[in-house]
Picture 1 (cartoon, one colour):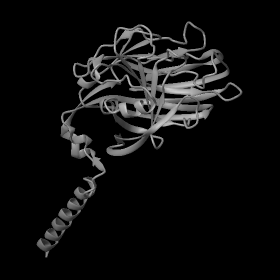
Picture 2 (picture 1 turned 90 degrees about the horizontal axis):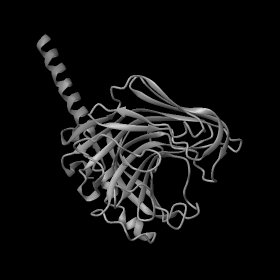
Picture 3 (picture 1 turned 120 degrees about the vertical axis):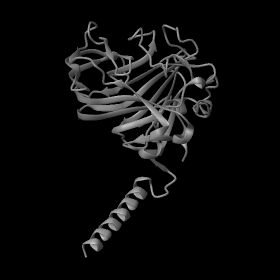
Picture 4 (picture 1 turned 180 degrees about the horizontal axis):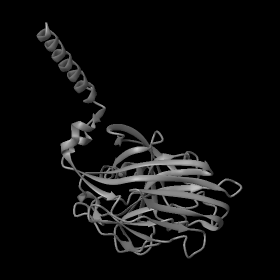
Length: 335
């Protein structure tokens, strides 16, 4: 009798294990690749957090601190730059506090009586930078991963996911976007931006709808295999192009908007996005982009925010990690 019970228990365990394996691997689904399926196809390099001791980077509207900089060490022998980057605030009370502690970055934006420098919605973009920006505000070349040495010709980039683990909060005012701000140029040693350079923004979490916004041209949708909390989902992102930013000689902006507000562990295949932009740019009349001629100069991560009509804003985010997944083959992109 005891042997029969043992055999029954073993059979039950085997059945449950088999069901779990089927469920975990997606049950034959072709649109989602679960994490276990591609675990052996990439190498992970951690940009953040690193071995820095706890410190705060506190900024207000004054020119002395609005663009304050800090050097952040990674766990992969690379560095990042941090800045509150309050580029559109001429006056405000309160501060922006970028606190590095307990292996995380906590950004708290608490400002009142904001007076903008320009009519642009955006007040600022507190965040981190990896790569080379020889223009305002960083003027810096961070220490690079050997596997991703920026600036780098786009067509020569490895297949890689940039993976963030983050959360946001919004009490007063508005989060415009939590995003990547990526810079491309034909000459990585430029010290100012102009027409011929590209700004690529990937909005993972956003509240500002670009439909109908003057000068922004909707150019279609792109399916991007996006890592969302452990699985790859083929999300359909909207694409908008701003042919000129600010003036007739302004750089070109291209914006990718997620179909849903993403938080948690979110990964985007940066090289995949950059090599598939041309059809969208051409629809907006921009015919100068060539992945064989343009460099990926830098990748920024941060939050664009704006104030209420009373000039107040209380928003922020937590960044728990920023990792680079170097993909060894194209299997992670299949659907």
